[in-house]
Image (cartoon, rainbow, N blue to C red):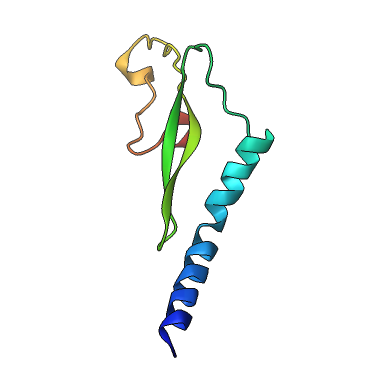
Length: 93
C-alpha cells in the first residue's frame, strides 16, 4: 500500500460518515425539512441536537416544545393519584 492509497481510503471514509449530515442539509435547503426561524410561539424554541455517528458528529436543528396543564385538586389525600417515579404521566403507572 502506498501513501496515496491510505489518503484515498481516509477521504472515502470521511465521505461515508458525513453522508447523513449532507442529506439533512440538502433537505433543509430544498424545503423538505422546514425550520421556522421568524417570530415567537409560546412553548416552542429552536435548538440543536448533537448527533454522534461514531467517527463523525454534527448538530441538527430541532424544535423543542413544552406543554403544561393544571392538575386536578384532590379532595383528600386518599383520593389523590400516586406519583410514578420515572414516568412522564400518571396514566402510565
